[in-house]
Image (tube, rainbow, N blue to C red; front, top):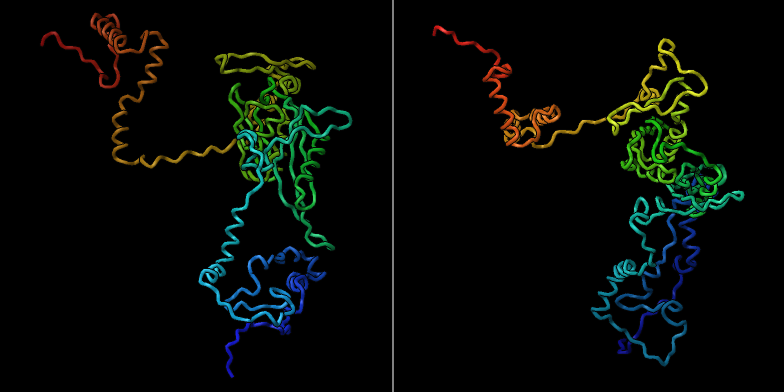
Length: 433
C-alpha cells in the first residue's frame, strides 16, 4: 500500500553501547590506568578528553535523522505534519567543511595583548622569561637588596622515578642575582609541574641567601686569565683592555652583568647547553683568582705589569708585605713557572684554522696573487724607512727626492753601492780595455 503522506525518520532503539553510557564513562574506558600503571608513569601517555561535539553535529546528514532527546523533543505532536526535507548543495558542502572551518577559526581567535619589551630587555628567545630582568630579590634578614638585579638562566622540566607515584615531573629554574659590584649569588629552585613562577621565586630567595664576593681589577675585568671546568664544560677566560666589552656565551653575559665585569673574553669548549655546569665552572674560576697583592705574598716577588698601552714598559703593581723579596738563587721551578701555565693548568683554548675560500685555487686568483708578489715587503719597508727617518713622508715626491739624493751620493762614492737581489757582485772595468 502506498501513501503520499510525508514522514520523518525517527530512531527509537537504544541498544547501541555508546548510547547507553554517558560521556564520562566512555572516556574512562579509554583513559583508565591501573594502580601498577600509575606507578610506571602511564598516566601521561593516555590521550586527553576531546570536545567531540564541536566537530560533529548530531543528526547532520542527507536525511536529517531526528534523535529524540538529542536534536528533537522526546514527544512528537501528532498535529505537526511529518515530511522529509532534503539538504541543499550549500548545506551539504558546509557540512563536509565543518571541521576545516573549526580549525581555521581556532587560529583566528584573538590572543591577549602581551606587554611589548625593548629589544635589550627581551630574553634569549623572544618574550620568554629566560634571560629577562626579574628585578631585585626579596630582602633577607633586614638586608636591603633593592640595588640587586636577577636573571633566569634556565627553565627545564625534570623527572624523578618513585616507587609509589611513578615518574614525578617537576619544574627547575636556575637564577642568578647580583648588585653589579662584585656581590652575587645563584641557586636552583624547584616547584611542581607547570609552576614555573613558583620555581623562579624560590630560586631568587635561595640565591639572595647564598651570596659571594668576586675581586675585580679596576672594577671592570678579571685579574688574570684562568681555566675552569665542570663535568664536560671547559671555560677559558681572558682579561681584556678597557672598552673591549663582554664577548662570551649569552648566559655568561648575564652573569658578568650581575657581577660587574665589563671587559672580558670567554671561550667555552665541550658542552655549551649544560647551563648549570657552565655557571658553576665560570664562578669557580672567578672565586679562585688571586689579586696582585696575594700573588706577591705567595711568591715573595714583585708583581710587574707590562701594559701595551705603555709600550710594554714594566710597572710594579705589588710587592710582598709578609716577607722579603727572594734573591735569584732562592727561586724554585714553581716560581719560574709562567703564570699563564699556572692559572691555565697547562691548557690552552683550541684555535681552529679557517678554511681557505672557494676561490683560493682558481687561475684568476693565483694570477692576481702572483702580480702582487713583488710588492709583498712594501709595507714593512715603508714602516722601517719612516721609523728610521730616511723618508719624511710616504709620498711619491718625497720618495723620489730621497732616491735621487742617494743615487748622487753613490755616484760620488760617498756611500757604497749595495749588493743584493739582482746585484750580487760588481766587477770593475779594466783600464787597458
